[in-house]
Image 1 (cartoon, helix red, strand yellow):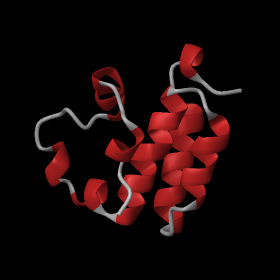
Image 2 (image 1 turned 120 degrees about the horizontal axis):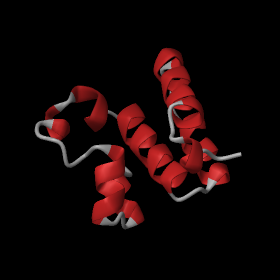
Image 3 (image 1 turned 180 degrees about the vertical axis):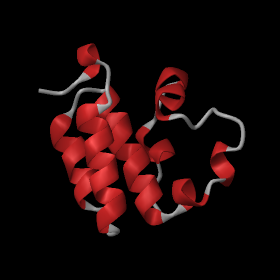
Length: 84
């Protein structure tokens, strides 16, 4: 299963995605296939690569979770980090 670690994230990127928080790896949604796609999408958001971000969002099968990931990557980001 592809994970964020297959994309060579930096420590700063791991922090941005939130995988360095205590207990983060134990969260079920972070270890499911959809969770891995969400993490990778957030990684590409941080890298300001909208095409790759959208590619991984589209791979999320759970419709509600997909909407949540889309919303958070497009709306919750700091103004300076938003992808136009």
